[in-house]
Image (cartoon, rainbow, N blue to C red; front, top):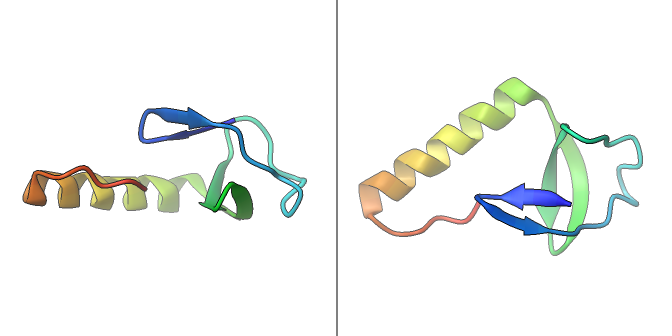
Length: 61
């Protein structure tokens, strides 16, 4: 289960079986396709939030 901007969805971790609860993963069409470290994930999420604030639109990570 992942949290995508407040939306929780089940995904497959078959491609990254080492992923554990609390890890950050890159998700594409319902599959975790890679892992990302916490610092990089937080930077990316901050950029998504900044884009949303600038456009006033919902931005889905």
